[in-house]
Image (tube, rainbow, N blue to C red; front, side, top):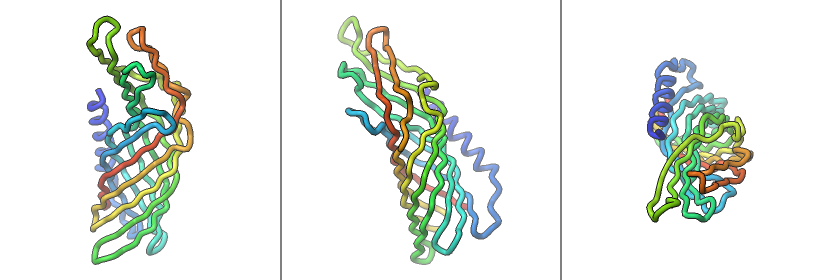
Length: 219
């Protein structure tokens, strides 16, 4: 289920990039960014990072030789792995967001075709979908059981605000980027699940925390 959702996100953003018209203005550029991420829920104990993917489009406008303003639209898998209640119940929470950051970029050219870019700014994330997977001891016997399901989207705040910092090293049209986003607002009103009518799982309100590493192609 998760891989099917990932493929859908990748396909949608690839189509969006394909139909985008190349920028004709010298100071304006469009691009495509994708990569892998590690995310967790800040403020919850016993939380492990969750690996995921992201894919999106980016646009930049050079306001001077060294300064630019950038905006992205990125579909991202976020979430966390945690043991909420100490009963050996392993939970994985997956959230899908459409993240739209606005960044101030400081560009440092060096070499013949190389560029180091430092970025910082603010981001709004639009919540799309939430799901969970679990592994828990069986009520009868010693074996482990597993399952999955969707989270009630009404418990989530529709918009998630955060601050962003990034560093990017580019050669020509391609760049490698590392980015960190820290949520400054709560993501939901609390998550609770009853598994198999026996295990009650409750996750308190929290904030998203995401590290991304990937590539950027601009044209």
